[in-house]
Image (tube, rainbow, N blue to C red):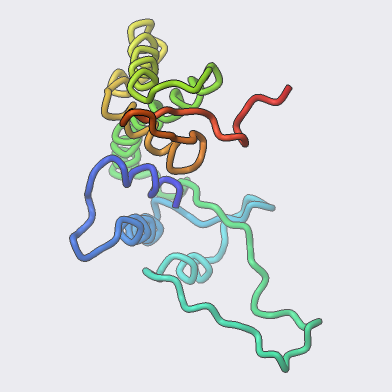
Length: 197
């Protein structure tokens, strides 16, 4: 879901009748079906049976919530225990085609993830409040400098478009508070992200 949120700022690649989240969910389901990704448990790092993988990823939309009846015993367990699961790249199917596909995805998502992570690092030096256009310019200059010093893995991570989208995402998730002064957005860190003294 987190990657879905990041990609939603970067372009529309879903069908008009489909939400972006649905499209990402279906794609992950296909990766599991084709054996590129597998569902594993957090505790023992072992693969879960295909039944659980299908059960968790084959639904396009969440089921309606089911509530316990008031007559049920409060001490009884309700439903199955929620397992802590994650996805990992399958070691079994390391075909050349799968490796090429994973490399393609890495190259596609690499600049985006590098730009966002570099923007997060840049926040550590934030001294505000600062007008948003000025902050965008400073962040862009920082990303370009990383590219020129050959620190950046992907030169594409220094595009102004990615800078704007990273700042937009930080505003959306509450890292920045935004106020308007004379039609200019002023950014400052929300109290949660202020340095602790």
